Image (cartoon, rainbow, N blue to C red; front, side):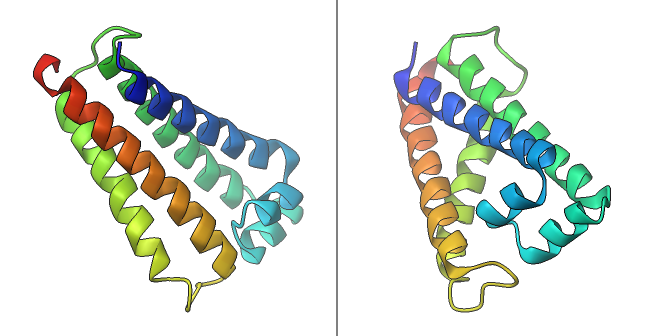
Length: 139
């Protein structure tokens, strides 16, 4: 079992669950986690849009968690695990780096959101990269 991929999968699962929390707890959670005032207002108005967007993010993160657990040997081997983990790692790393360039023009989000979310994504990308490198031969 690969500890880095277990940690990566666990962190992605936590992120997925936090997104479900945003759906359940609504506008205050959207605001706290930096989704932007527009998303919070839409949630307050009862719009389905924040829920749908957040559900998609939840499903993506949950799937990423399953692929990390699969590569770590915790669950059965999923199809295309090597390719999918390369894509997950790349997305986390690119999102992590790109977010730092958005601090000065935050596009409806706070600069703090971009700093924290970018640091988290970059960290997840690095953890995935290390785990992927360690597990490469067996994937």
